[in-house]
Length: 479
Image (tube, rainbow, N blue to C red):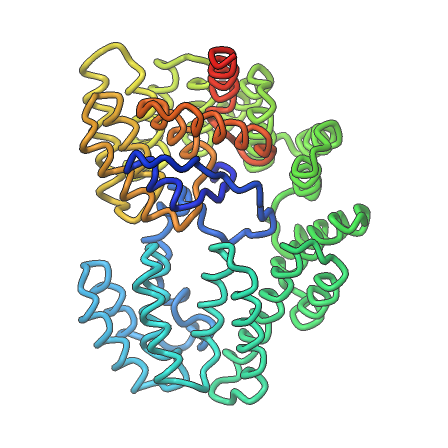
């Protein structure tokens, strides 16, 4: 279960301004992309899955069937890459491509690796090389389009998707890859229209995707989301029912509807839909967790605790149930219970990045110096593991500021700014606002908090109540 916060696009220049004590006001864009399911929000939910995502399937599964043949050179490349031997990895990828030319070009495969671990700059350089070395292969353009789209450069993304679309009909290198390219062009162009709220154009494209791949749960999920936004709620729910039939582990149809109602600001309908889903399958851990997470966003911590307790009783060794209990305990000011639940998570999975992050944020608020030192060790652990992750570095910056280690904190904040790609989750944005206050940048902090609270209607926001209280306090002081 993922406990991830809503994505906020925060101007990179604004973050760097905080680091450098610049005078420009911080900016938090009100633009949200609820349909950007693949966007990297700089959270540890994204980062913690990066290393495990370095698989043969993710690198070449769109090109070849893996059921009847192994690709040892690709496996060796992944191993070299994990050991930070990029040159060695590239040599193995070149050998794999020479042996099997229907694979993606080696620059493209290595770029995918870099993207999976968050190295956007290195990936872009490789893709720029690929478009020169392999001018008839559309995949580099598609990956560049994805990066432009996730960074909010919609017009650039559209141009790149259209460039790839013009290349796909003439591509004859691999029928499996060609079909994958066709789907990615459709999905990408639809996403462009979705972001621009051009629902009719998006619906036409998504229907093409469903026609091309009727058993794709992703296609039907996207179609359901757009149907909802086009005012066709009944048709949307039908698509979510189809998704559940195709993929039994997918969200309950009413959970999908509830999340969309919530994004639309219709909290009463969201509550009714969540309750319907929970009543239909109270034993389903994912449904219970989704409901409890939403209750957290509504500050209904008592009901959230009841749902979380029931979930933990049913699945006492579930990382997700324990993590949710820890979050709710922290929100209720029950630090000891939060620490106990989060430590239980680590006893099951010592590398759970989100639990480590939450422990750092919980323990740094303790009055005990030993707890504060533990908080620093946890924050450093994540920052070392995920050096290109915004959330890990900003949490470390916050902990260091709390310990009055300003120079080190500024360095961590700069790393977080550089890793963010212009995007932060809501909790990291809140911590940046608190850092602004420590640097006597009150007006910037107020602007950031206002925009967070005005737009934070999707996804758990750990510091929502604290943000409200802090804003009220600051505005009262200003008045």
